[in-house]
Length: 213
Image 1 (cartoon, rainbow, N blue to C red):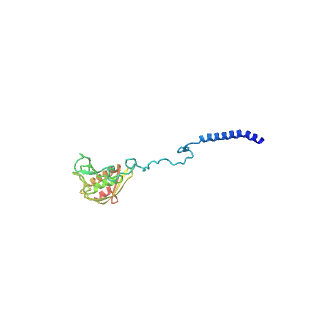
Image 2 (cartoon, rainbow, N blue to C red):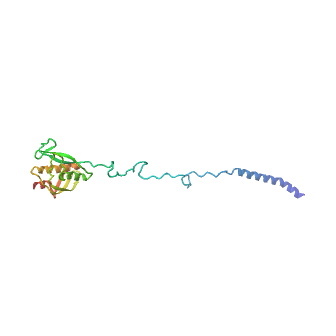
Image 3 (cartoon, one colour):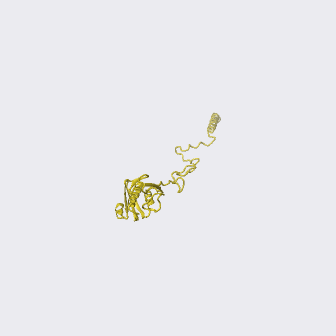
């Protein structure tokens, strides 16, 4: 009889406890997420996920639909810089200074544009225009036209232009001596913007060389 009373007292309590446990389990299960938890934001602390998409690769130094930035123009293209012409000086015989600077035997010194060059090549281009033997414009005389001189080298120190020539000078008479000096000197000065000129033929200064002619 005592055993029966003990079981009766425990019965309702056990049943209540079992009910609470069932309710607790039911409540907990209702809070479980129905979907997977969201992934951490891209780039956040501790994130190592790869980006969703990669930007298209770009080529350094180019613009979309355009030419390479900073690329040198192709030789012969319309963007290639054209060398500015040089001025070579010739003689207008017995002009008396009407069309140029009067000098020597009542002549005039007249400049004429010739094919140029860039940088250091400008001096050689200008002087060589006097030495090529047939480059003078119509109606102008070249006192160096029959000479056999060639341009060796030249330099410019910011004030004085120096020119070295080699070969043979063949003046056509006494009046050709000042013509040779004026043509070479003024042409060299103009080519580089110098204020003084030092010209040598076969190692001799132009003034000394002309004294022997």
